[in-house]
Image 1: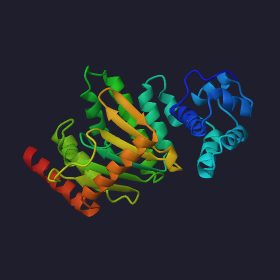
Image 2: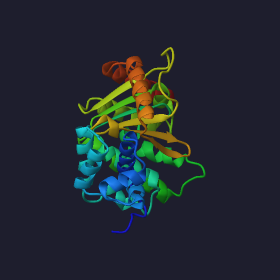
Image 3: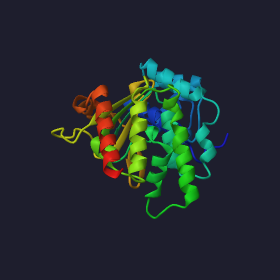
Image 4: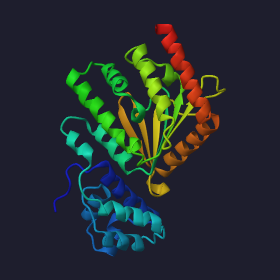
Length: 287
């Protein structure tokens, strides 16, 4: 089978974990290849996600690298066993790779934890709010592009709306007050958040302005937890696009950040009341 031209984020991550396994064993690519019956080029392609391997070869590599982390190896074997295309592939010709990779990460997560400072988390946005967020992009997008991005964002929400994946959302007060599309859109969005907060699979916690020192990152960040901690992924939204981090040091840093945010945020009940109070302010001021 020829090498993949455009491996997915998940395929690349699989290869990255094999490279880390090899490096922890102190092997170069050629040395590992000799041990498991692969040539150096195949090892390079495997570690870049351009070729797949069988579960048997995975376990041979793990044994050669003296990897005793069985849960991790089993999780990698599960990736090999995956078949079929994700729903997001239907959008490959119309959206940039960033959009598809976010959906892919969310779909395979065991839990999702997000912290936002500038807007409501995408997984909790109403259609009108999401459309307004995309409408403020500069240079302006054509209406059809805004509609496609909005439809994609709403479809992404199924991972939490169906209860498949638990979501913890830490939302800074700034994001609750930032307007996209005007006061009516914001009020409707806040009302939707209040409803979502009653969902047993969705936890919404507010970080108010009066917290002494905001403990989170300045960017909007999501931690997607995998089947084992080694397969966690950090997603960061920036003005230039979406960034993904999976190095152990990055994962440890952001786990600590989320722990700090958790200690500073209001409780779920307090957060629900807080959102209600902001909604009343918006409705009173702009009625």
